[in-house]
Amino acid sequence: AALILIFVSVSAFVYSKAGAVAEAAIEEKRSELLVNQIDDALQAMLEQAVNLRGFLLFKSDSTYGDLFNNRDRMLNAIAAAKQTAAGKTEFLGQIDAMQKAADLYFNQLAVPQSKARKETDMPIDQIVKIGVNETKGQLDGFRQASAKIKQAARDESAALSAIKADASAALNMTLLFGGIFAALAAVVLAWMLSRSIVRPIVGMTSAMGRLAGGQNDIE
Image 1 (cartoon, rainbow, N blue to C red):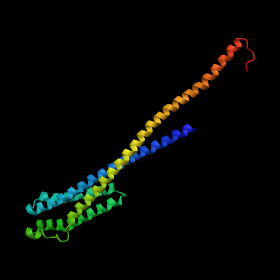
Image 2 (cartoon, one colour; image 1 turned 60 degrees about the vertical axis):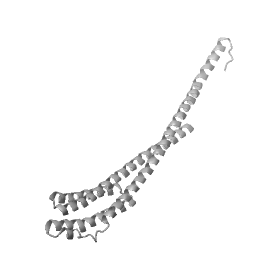
Image 3 (cartoon, rainbow, N blue to C red; image 1 turned 135 degrees about the vertical axis):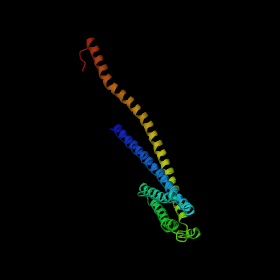
Image 4 (tube, one colour; image 1 turned 90 degrees about the horizontal axis):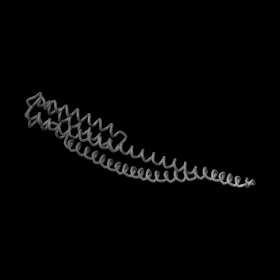
């Protein structure tokens, strides 16, 4: 009964540590995915700014289209990041700050400036002033929020990696000592089993020898 209890306890410990390793690995990949999604959103946001400046200078239809394509790419990346960060308020708050800054930049600066350039003959030096005061600091705010998310996600990933390493080490040690204990237990059980079988046979052989020798009072 004691051996069974020990084996059950060891099995439960191994199961819990294996579960901890698997859970930490999943969360670590989740943090890495979030960093990639935030990077994609930041890259798309910066490319929007480049596209806007390029369109204001050259009035190229392809650059105008790229402006809106990168806007969509940025929104998709932010939406994906929100799904990845679901349940983590510290990340979701920063992602919301990123989207708020991006929306202000797009709606109050990018759209009015590109529209004025596309549909009017307003001088460029006047167009570039549209929405500047209303959107001052929004690109920097977007960068700062994205930097905070990436740093927090990397810190979380490092912590999860440490948890995974500790759990793996504990699991390996448990399996090692469990294997040694199981081997010793098998030896002991084999010895006890052999004794339980051999002793009656030896006793019977001895008794039969005495009977053969004429000793009839054997019990």
